[in-house]
Length: 244
Image (cartoon, rainbow, N blue to C red; front, side):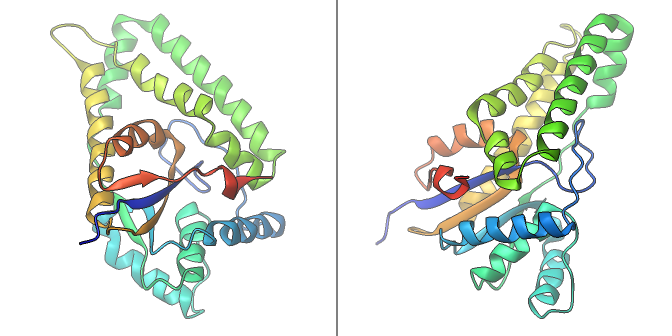
């Protein structure tokens, strides 16, 4: 019986298209130069020879997602300007896979009540938090605008960026008091979402399999921690696929 763990290649991304995330960058994935960069990225990732391409889409969207993927493979559909279709669809097709695998699942993230409480009880925290976030957003947007896609992805997968991004959730976890654990609840919800993504990965992890996960880089800190302790998955270094 094959007991080898599945190999997992984690690609952290920024979101190409519209996002509900607090931060976003402008990236015209349909521009000719960016299209060339995406094709080159997919060619590099295809060398991993994945038998599963997992993406940050809801598991409840599986049927619709794979209807679109089938239409893309048949040449009847142009991929939308998001990383799920621009990278995920192209990569799955390049690997001759019959489907893409969504692994995300929505959970209630109580941002609104947290910030309402903080604005009423600690407005200085709110001002400092959003000021810092917008400074980082401008920096990241500027970096993406003047970088190739490979250069930008190297930045978004760098351990220093991943740690800094995760630290914002830890910062928010301090909001509230003993009667109202708003920050703790938010952090627990964020861990729940990532734990569910991890669980969904393990469900498609065949012994000796090869999985690529394309996901927002904000998820990497928790996922890497979980994966490092999993007997079913072993992370493969991304660096050789992103060398510029």
